[in-house]
Amino acid sequence: MSGEPLVVVLIGPGGVGKGTLARRLVERDGHLWLSRSWTTRPPRPHETDADYAFVGREEFAHAIGEGRFLEWAEFHGQLYGTPRPTPPAGSDVLLEIDVQGAEQVRRDFPDALVVLVTAPTEVALEERLRGRGDEDAHVRARLRSAPEELARGRRLADRVVVNDDPDRAAGEIVSILEGLRRARRTPS
Ligand code: 5GP
Image (tube, rainbow, N blue to C red):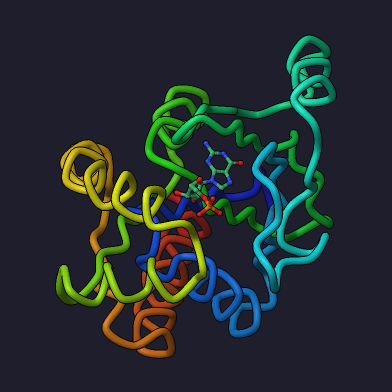
């Protein structure tokens, strides 16, 4: 592979399974490098430093001031940001972020591939959100914002992938990526 890395962005309402899908994608595609975000949100019971860099608001604000983020956004009262990526040579960059962040990435990288991940049903979304152990008020707030996130996501996304099964959905995204890489290698 040559040239600038492709930037691949997964968006979709919380609880849709983007995190699992992102991990499947990097397992299946040896040329994808997954960015690790920063957040001011406290870790959930099973989360580790591999999931996020968990930082305080002051440290986050300092990093904004130093221009260390590719994008950042406030989501339900917490800050989330993507550090400027440092992928190994030849790798493409995978981001798993919210729709506001994706809008910023699109402005800086017009060729980014934005994939909107959706749940097969609203019931599935609610079950997944509740299964993470978040407080009920948080779950309800996230469910309330899901339709607006979806509408913005549909306006921005190049592709929509239904996460009915993470392996199938990952396979679909890998095929899209392989097609894009082929197109980039073929001079027009
Ligand atoms: P959660 O708190 O459920 O881990 O994440 C909440 C939302 O923030 C999700 O939509 C997730 O994709 C998004 N998110 C995670 N990391 C980032 C980031 O670096 N930037 C932005 N803008 N959103 C992020």
